[in-house]
Length: 64
Image (cartoon, rainbow, N blue to C red):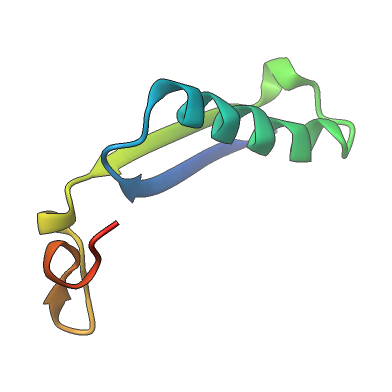
């Protein structure tokens, strides 16, 4: 079965950073012998207003 990796992250990363994430995750699987062509990585960008932890919106508690 081909791996599909879903990653939820805050929106705002540039294209180069997203490319590094995708390549890095793919490398984990290729190091285990899975062909890169079999690996799918899906990045889902979520606004900080739509992300909460400990009862607070990330937009109010995380300034990065």
